[in-house]
Image (cartoon, rainbow, N blue to C red; front, side):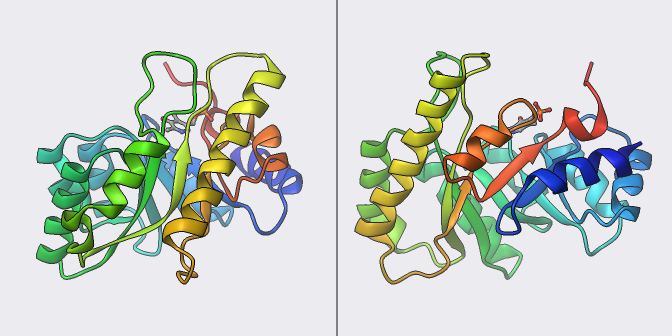
Length: 220
Ligand SMILES: *Cc1c(COP(=O)(O)O)cnc(C)c1O
């Protein structure tokens, strides 16, 4: 079942788009099923859950952290996360850097942007990101690398509005790319699109989609 669902999604996405299988709340058995179908990138949004799964599941899985995280929990994911999608402050980034240093690694990160119209979504504005990227504190962080941007669109069915939100994130990416990462080939990820909207996100330039329920079924 999972195998068919993965194959159906893969058929819809071009080769330059990375699929993150969002396995939050799902048991290891289902993750293994996806793994045995060839999937290697999984997304989690709770620090302890990511750690628990990473410790027992195959070591060649790339674990992405996609949720809001408190600074005191970064230590749980630092040894295991190949990409943290949800950086929304310099303080959080400094903590990721500190834990990267402790684990003797450089942790790839995305800046999360607020693109939805809903009040509840986390994320930076373009102005806040520019401030972060020009701060002296940022320039001293050697154990993190910013490799792109992430955003969550509104939970709505209005295609035009979703499209506009994705266009906004693509615009933010282009601005940052031109103004801060011109000579940085590794700044290339636009993480946008979920089960309900990934096709629109890809049309608007997504390079990484985060798909949960369309693979693993609905969550409780
Ligand atoms: C849960 C989650 C997803 C996946 O959502 P689905 O609608 O199940 O595909 C994607 N991104 C983030 C940040 C999430 O928390």
